[in-house]
Image 1 (tube, rainbow, N blue to C red):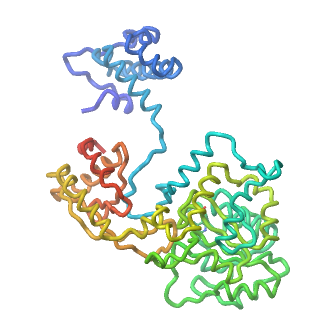
Image 2 (cartoon, rainbow, N blue to C red; image 1 turned 120 degrees about the horizontal axis):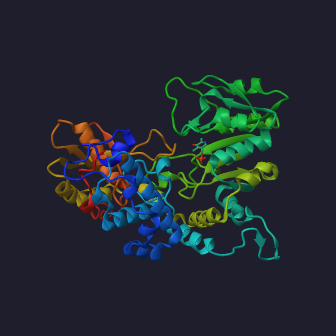
Length: 490
Ligand SMILES: *Cc1c(COP(=O)(O)O)cnc(C)c1O
């Protein structure tokens, strides 16, 4: 049976049920009259006239369309119904669209779910800075104009061993700016095995083109040798570039030239060697039992002149892109006009300042940096959460679905350590009957996404999987089950 709303959408006049006769547009209340209705006056007192009048006008417009289609019933014009419809529209308008969700996808640094969660220290510092004036570009010692980079440059240099450092909006911007400043109008030599695409919108050849640099590809997809780089160098060459193949691995009959070997060639030809490291953990993750990921420190030690990396991947901070390395090159990068366009704001700097300072106390890092804490979370801990949520889930979902604890493999995500998996635990939810089970699962996934704090799982092998690595507080899931709308139509 079509609802009145749908009949308008489809443009066909629905036949009203026999007992009620459809309303004509002339019978609709005027805007003034609706606004004088006592409970609508109360809405205006609460929210102000502007919002309430605009929404009342839109509501009447919508009802008019329904009336014209012959699909509006008199009961829909009862004062209580009009008030409820108006209040609902106002709530929807006021609801913030960027919302907290529970990431049970199994991917810790999920780009679509906002990557790293910020440490408490960063949240606190952002709050302290955001609401008032701050010394963003003001030197407190001299009382003169300062430089926003200088707030964290010293710390970045200390942590990475670089001579100089600057920061922009994200790592894509860091690569773009570096290439524009050092390679514009000239050639950049890169191995064919390293022409990465990150999440569809960052493709190295296209970034190169936007920066005005000419890409010179060398070697083959699986094998590149030092002589390939050597032969590609001409008078037009601006720099040599290495790109960390962060979201794939080339395996089998392969060869590549590492940074140490390539830096000798770069040095002999007086060319800078630039490394786009992507994730760039600032500490050796092996200390927490995690697979190793190259660090900016190692890249600089190996002889790279410039290294770029992200703020919100393994580093565990806000979205940002770092450019660290030789001070003469960093000075050129900073002078490029694009730097001004890609610079970071005070909120981001506040979060970076606080996050980077956590690295000065590595012994406390796993406790204070959520990304590391989640990646290194003990299996027994995840298992305890699984046992805590199982019974409430079973109780709420039976008999339509069955639920059980299953071993899962979490991913790090965001192009970090792509082939590594972390042993995890979760809940697999399967439909009670096999008939129409695909639809039932999609409906359940949707119902979970419609919760006040949406729950994001993934469907695999005819089950909805909830990986509990990132659920540190079981209550955040279980307290919502009471309002789960299992019959919500997809
Ligand atoms: C992730 C990544 C980027 C893009 O970094 P963003 O911070 O997402 O802009 C660029 N290069 C590599 C190798 C990456 O892994």
